[in-house]
Image 1 (tube, protein in one colour):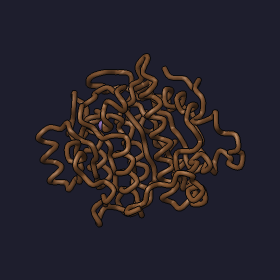
Image 2 (cartoon, protein in one colour):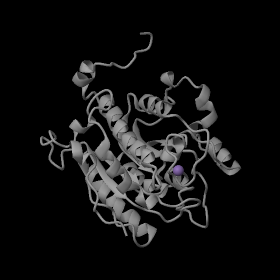
Image 3 (tube, helix red, strand yellow):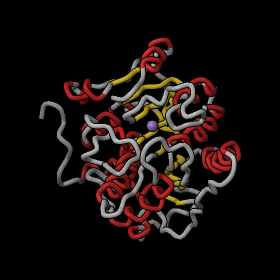
Image 4 (cartoon, rainbow, N blue to C red):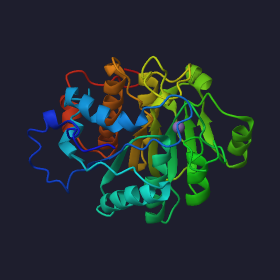
Length: 312
Ligand SMILES: [Mn+2]
């Protein structure tokens, strides 16, 4: 069983963060080492610890600003023993405590199934439907898989059916015919692996009627395996690092991110590059969220290497 003997996210760089108490940090990390319905390679239970360890190597400066200055708190590891409904209950309780203070829960999986818990909590919290933006190689829209409706291959289907969410998928390149049909009948937007290769992501916009409140679910296998290879079900032809970040920046522009997760990292001996990339993705997404909120404008102005503006 997983214990809490890992450091807090970016603990090595937390000096200067004293102005934040535990509760007023913007980001609250919930480690969830769940691994129950693995379909190919295992190891996702080790994901949260590997990400937290690797985060010690991150720079405070993410290229544009210092997301850590918004405050990052790391909560205790969720006990992932017992029945899945009991485990969901524990995750939901932790997420609710954060969402009630209007802070942003950041769930670190674990297998993709964990996403259902924060989505349930956040969907209940808002009167309007939540829009899920999903990075993934797989559609995760199966009705059941391996005999379980709570398999990681079904998690987005559950989120849509239980919580009435809208969904937009990025990077998908492995799906069955029933999932293709489900996408059509349930208006699931998508920019799949091959489409990304020729898309002008800098001009990407979500459909105008897509919800204002966004939940980001980041399955690391959505990225190309050359970026993160340490995952249970790698598929060739995924999104590059920068394609993913440009897409996420564009997807949330003008919208409100109410939570996010990063799932399916399955650390393997000797591949610290994957662990670091996963930690960097968490931190960079925090930066994108901060800047989308209009925070860190001063830092962005002072950046010695400003982002290239269109037409400059
Ligand atoms: Mn997935």
